[in-house]
Length: 142
Image 1 (tube, rainbow, N blue to C red):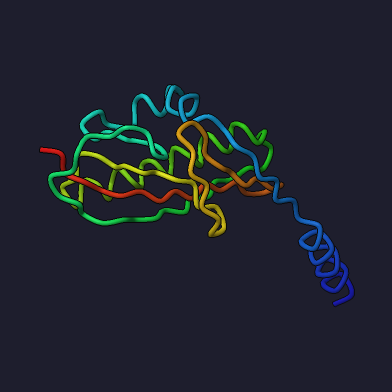
Image 2 (image 1 turned 180 degrees about the vertical axis):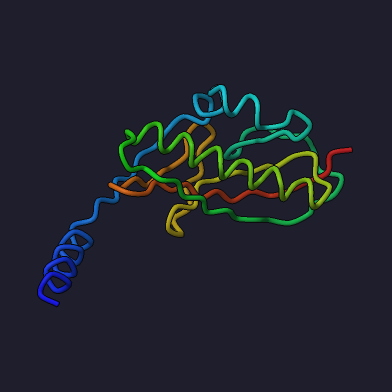
């Protein structure tokens, strides 16, 4: 029982001081990773922030994703790249479900704070987890 109390106290102290470092990273860099190049299909186009996008023939609605990854023993950059790819794969899956051929107006939405950028996404990284949340609008262009 004594050990249980000591371990519980240590875990509480650790969680009270948990790190949540928020940083901005390049969409382009994340999309150029070997994993992103092989896992993201080219049949769906992605447009970040308010970057120029094709006209929508049909708007299929907005969707948000919130993906986490294990960051233990990884640097923030690598963990955030992986969390970003997971979020993008979620957008890709949703686009396929809806029959969309593009996702426009993609924004970071980490912990409910929208950040609209044409070039960067926000990632929160801690000692154990890293997370990326994205929101986008799905459209058909043809």
